[in-house]
Image (tube, rainbow, N blue to C red; front, side):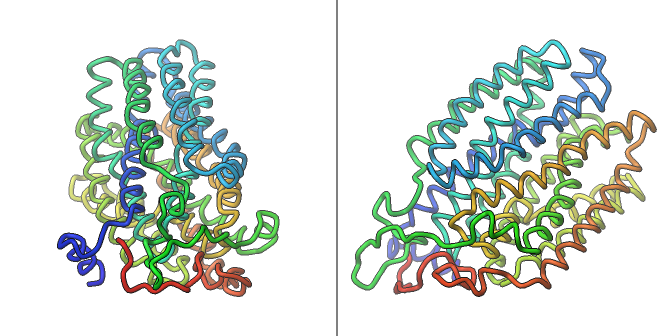
Length: 445
């Protein structure tokens, strides 16, 4: 009801829209495009590259895996840069370099070039992707961080719903090389202007307060220094490693399926166009799931409970697909998968900021990405190798089920461990990153 009253107040002109929401919309559009032409579209390139160069499925998949590996290894450096220079600078430079790297991929003619160019693109894409966008949203929102991160996560889903069919059409019209040229041009036209003209590092830069809070004296407070554990302090806690293990195993299954979902559907007799439509439908449903999770995320003091639920649901989705690939079974799978993957893109930010604070979020998140990337780089390659050896994805599905079950186990351990920020001396204590001296009677949302 609170959200409905807020929308009504905005529509009737009694409350202005907090600029952070406009910024969040810009982040959603950027995230949708960036994820749509990369992660969501990986599977579209498997068959065209196999046909043109005679590469095996494992060889093609290793290009994506190596890209994920290097982007993860660069995560701590990018996170540290984001903490020091601000997310906006990272996104601007990243958008320029990513656009150029897509043009480079279009010139691929050998396998070593496919690996090298994918790695270069992944490093630059990381500069304008998850780390800076989640850091930016976390700076602009405190009490509404859950719904804001859910909006950002819906942008990831929107990439699968809106961009994948367009990329599939683009590949059909101008071949896979031309599609990368289109991706490069579109990055410069879409992401770069948003970063230049819409994004700002902190509300204080435009005279607003975090969450659009109005203080009793009507003034804008200067930016309050964030608090939190340093990277060194965080890694010395058992909670960090429990979360790192859980996230690594969770995203092992998610990204392995993300790369191979189109080839999987083709392997059971479904056309590539129909497979792309299934992916798009699932992505559309996940937008609803992520926004729904966002509405309730801030109500859970320990987000590990939600993470446990998501891992369990994804286990069930893989089990359904392993047992049956009829159209009704695929429908059940899509429903379970969209629920289980619903809060995936916002898990790290909600888990890490509540556990370790906001001050060094970029650095801590960057190191977490190294561990999660270990799963991401192995997963697509192993799944591809399994198909090459057996002509089926059955054992890949079994492995995915095992990793989701293991993720559930580690999230359970994390839930039982003490959270450092609950006793941290400062405004970050108890999971909030801004001081509560505001009068919240008229937040500009």
